[in-house]
Image (cartoon, rainbow, N blue to C red; front, side, top):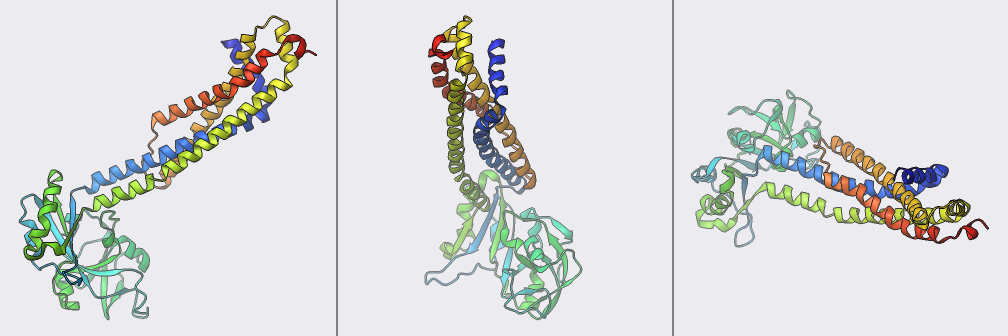
Amino acid sequence: MIDLLRLGFFGMRTRPVRAVLSALGIAIGIAAVVAVVGIPASSAAALREKMSKLGTNLLTAAPGQDFFGQDAKLPETAVPMAKRIGAVSSASATGKISASVRKNDLVPSSDTLGLQVQAAEQDLLKVLNAEVRAGRWLSPGEKSVVLGGTAATRLGVDEPGGQLWIDGQWFTVVGILGPLPLSSEIDRSALVGWEAAKEAFGFEGNANTVYVRTSPDQVDNVRTLLGPTLNPQKSNEVKVSRPSEALEAQQLAESSYNALFLGLGGVALLVGGVGVANTMVISVLERRREIGLRRALGATRRQVRWQFLTESVLLSGLGGLVGVIVGIAVTAGYSISQRWPAALPWPALLGGVGSAVLIGAIAGVYPAVRAARQSPTEALA
């Protein structure tokens, strides 16, 4: 066995450039496969971590449309009614305000930056498990605003203390929220207090979105009860959703591309296998005298066959090993850039090297058999 390995490495050392180029195709294919498996696994791990932190027990209720296709309204009692459901641990709401937020009074009113102004109840942070990244939350009755993370970025607000122009009135920025993956609409909002919104903008007090926290094992039951509870007479006008399902759907949509990339990795492996086979066939033709000399010195057909088969397997195996290392580096680098935990499925890593060895064995069969069939007299002629 040791002699076979030495002969295999000797054949690769005598033609290093050709060996490297042949192994490159295998390495690219294995790296692609490892990265395609590793990156979605890292994304899924990050999603699980995020979901465990934010919780999958958040439900939202929003007004739908009435029988005539007009926008419906939730009653002012929506939040108190939601809290009456036994399995509901907490509930809060936001109300949409017909106003636009701008950096100052010189910015045209049409330049909304895709942001919205919403009234927020005092306990909204608790229900959403949200964090104030800078500053503080709203105090009752004060004329102030808290910005979602996206809203702060678009408005160019880095820290609290400044003022914003909201429909002809100045509001002081007292806080900036951290990211809220389950409530992206909050990220794009400027939030003012519930009572302040009534005084400044004539807000009527109807909730636009009700956020409800419940027991994880009671989510489906509460989801069924929420519509009829918030609006008993017109429960069909209440839309109830589970934000975590949107994240899961997004993850599923991203993973749908995995098959495509795995296919590309398979093509690269096929090309690499053909390259290895081509290299070994050419090696047999160029080393006819070596083969004839070994046969003349007593080497059997079986020994010659195993020599070239071993060289092919070593060539592919080294390519596979390099590919796994590159795939790990790509997965880890991308995960770090996205602030994900790097997940490296061991079956994919071991399977990468194993498949490379298998490809090398298949690619080396014909060249090995061809070398073994050469007689000493023909090879030395």
